[in-house]
Length: 413
Ligand code: BGC
Image 1 (cartoon, helix red, strand yellow):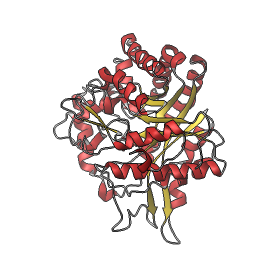
Image 2 (cartoon, protein in one colour; image 1 turned 90 degrees about the horizontal axis):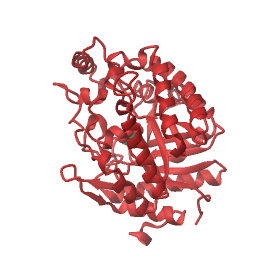
Image 3 (spheres, helix red, strand yellow; image 1 turned 30 degrees about the vertical axis):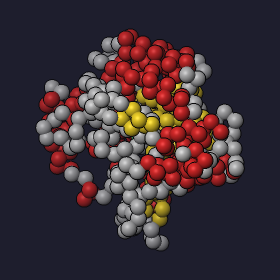
């Protein structure tokens, strides 16, 4: 059985808004509480990770994992424009210290979809000043936390808005979205509301790429030895028919951010499924295939394909910063992990420099617009009692991490 390289990182990931709870100063909190809203339910207490992070990090370490990827929340750190909360920064210092106490390598995301309410109210990423504001925030975080951060990423999936442009228009409720933005602007006391998920994807991309480049420089000079990268959303894009838009889609959605990642210290690869692209764009999964709770095709082999795609375009080390499946059936998650990791082994055999596998997610959490229904966690969370229950998939991934090689699930479970 092939062993993973020495020092390989084995982890699980979360994002602040999805687990911390009561992120009341964020743009998403505004959107979740509108009447009407497209959100299935509000995030409220989430996993109360803001208070329970110590126990959660201990659980992660106890499984055998050696890396925790989490995000810090801009809305907490800079609650009003130009006013930084030392108390919030100190909270994240305690989280980082908890990782080190458990011999867990922390990987910190500076921006995972949510923004401060004031940032949305001024127009968000479409405003020219957004770049300077983000760079200032990153610089502040790096100065306060840099000595404890091993890895940092500026953005989580900054190419997601471009990817969403390929969703067939019939699946997007444009009118409701427009109405929600109007209501949100009113609720925030503004005539605009610029949110990461909504708005002009191309304008956003230009702004965020400039912000990444400058934030990277600022963080490198402020944060000492911390490796700084970016995590990109990828899908295994497969062509359907002789005339199709697959290459055009890849060039538009992935290549600009892979090129930005290639100029960073590392690239984070994130993938969940494959996608079929025909003459007019995405055509959806073949009838009858197994679907996950998100409606994605169950396709663990996407990881191998995406690592190959990225490795052909960048020369920096690759880390899988998200990969997972939403399912109530944990045996399906075990199978997903086993098959996805077989793909990583193939990539290593092919000479691709993959240095870590971070599963999404550590906890069952708030899945954005879908609310709490999709279950991505290695650990179940009862959102009333906040009780955590370790799933067999967590023990499986932890067992693999301890032995640094893929194991037969029967040997562990
Ligand atoms: C995001 C996560 C999300 C996951 C599952 C990724 O796009 O980074 O925040 O929960 O996918 O949908």
